[in-house]
Image 1: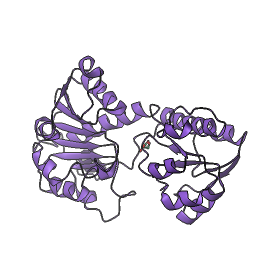
Image 2 (image 1 turned 120 degrees about the vertical axis):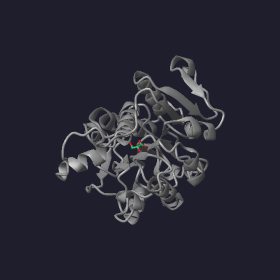
Image 3 (image 1 turned 90 degrees about the vertical axis):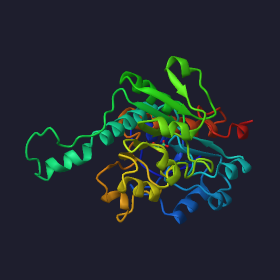
Image 4 (image 1 turned 180 degrees about the vertical axis):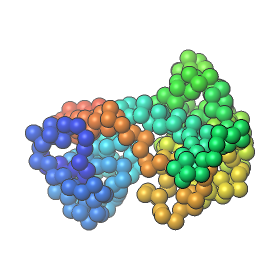
Length: 322
Ligand code: DGY
C-alpha cells in the first residue's frame, strides 16, 4: 500500500503507518505544490492530507489508484467530496478529538476581544503604560452576557457548556434542535437575524458550505449591537471579511476575535491587520497536544481502516464503503 502524507504529524501515528505501508512524506512544513500533490496522488492508494491541501476534481481525475482521502481536520471544505464519491473514494475526517481545543480557543477569543487584550498587551510591550487608571482600556463585559451560537454541532455545544460556567444566557439558531437544548439551558432563535440582534457575543461554528459562505456580511453586521463582539473559529469564508473590516473600523460592532480567514495566511496588506479592535490568531483552534496527536491517530486509523477493508471511525461519504 502506497500512502502520500502531506505534512509531518505529531505523536507516533506516522511510525505506526510506516510499519504497514510504503509512506511518502512531504518533507517541508508548507503546503505541497499542486503539481507535486497531483503526481503523488496519481501513484497513491491512500492520501493523508491537511485542511490546506486542495483535493479537487483535477487531482482526483489522475488519482486512479486512490481509495481513501484521510483529512487531518474536522472540516473538509478543501475536498471535492462529490467528485471523490463519484469515484468511490472514501473521505475521512477527525471529529471529536479537537472539540475541546476549538471550544477553548473560541472562549479565549471572546474574552480577548471583549477585554481588549491585544491593545493592552501592545500598550505594555511598547512602553506606553503610564499608570493604573480608572479609564484605561475599558472593554465590554464577558461573564453573564448573552452569547449567540451559530451552528450548534459538537464544537458549538462545547462552547455552550463552557459559557454556562460564565453565567451566560445562550441563544442559538439553526434547523437542528439538539437533545442537549434543555440540559444546556439554550434558547432557540427562529432566525439568524433574531440571534444577531439579541446577542452580546456571536460565535460561529458552522462548516463552510455553499449555504454558509458569506453568511455574515454587511447586512448581518449592521444588525448586531454596537457593543457586540464577533468570534470566528470555523472557516474564514463564512464571514465577508471586507465587510467586517468596515464594520470594525466604523464601529458598527465593538470588536472581533478571529482564528480563520478567507485567505490563509492573512495577506500582509489585509485591512484587518490595522485594526486595534480585532484579535487575530493564525488558525490555531486545534493546536494543543491532545487534539493534534488525537487527530494524527484518528487520521491514520481512518486511512488504514479503508485500505484494510474495515469501517473507518469517521467517514463523510460512508455510501462508498457499502
Ligand atoms: C479543522 O479541523 O477543520 C481545523 O480547521 C484544523 O484543526
